[in-house]
Length: 419
Image (cartoon, rainbow, N blue to C red; front, side):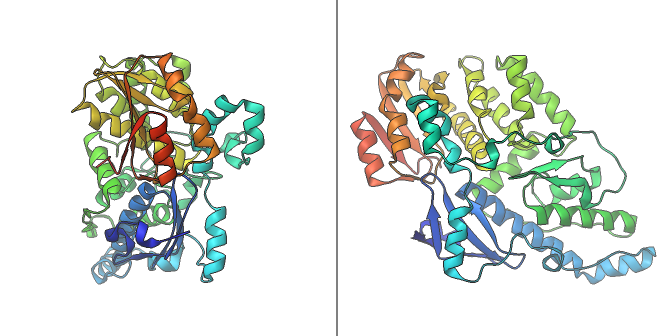
């Protein structure tokens, strides 16, 4: 267990949140307990932490609306009745845990993503039977209930209550579709319509319904500011605007379908990726758009999609989103030759003959799993593409032992190298 000092200072405390002193790690991602006026909740990984902090700003704007005299006057003038209540009175993100010892126990039980992050690679190295005995089973690997599948239907202008939003068993939004008004409100708030933050989902639907009742008597214009310290949140909003992701999800799906074909993905592979419920319309589009941006001269892009299909939950899907975005940035400065996916861990070989391995983790420990995966990683990749050197670029940091062992395997290790 670490202190909150492992978190960038700008993220530790804000106008609407504070991160609890105890921070745990599961070997890949840091796990945080966040206290806020809108409820207390757990977050796995710094990327998701940045998204959640940004969403708190959106909730604060909705909270201001609920106590707005101007809005109340507009309701009176319109002759409509609506339930007005502050956000924190409607629903909490999670139950508050006041006992520090109990909080630690809960934190240790919550993580689901990192445990599965490289499980597919470990199974290949050790053999499925051996590895299965070492891995703890989770609901994420059980066959999903058909009723949990996404139904990416087109728009309807009818009012929808929060009952139209369905939560998956372990993560994410299973939705029937948002009205244009609801999607526009998400856009004004700079947040994703497909967030797994149930409180935010419900509040947007509620406020959009009130806006509909009031009609033209009131127009909500939030003053959400993009905070410089929450990079993932800002990046997502910027990319969403650029890629027009506040439109009908069916339109997003068709764009993905066309580009997946251009990437060389078979119809079966493309269909598997499109149906993977660990992703949302946004995160699928981010992956496909980043791979498309690499350009047709980079071979093996469909191999990345094959690996991305292994995601079983939100943390693992965010791993592939992050790696794809990083490779897009790298390609602007370093010419790439080929995407390789030995052990289904995406990497690239540059035109200068360097094996570039991006690891989107907060803190990499040297465990039996990691040792097994990287022991013959170079040999496996050589069967796909020849290279002369290895660079491992970690989004966060590696433990001293992990750095030592990776260097002993002949790799150059770069930490905090994704900015």
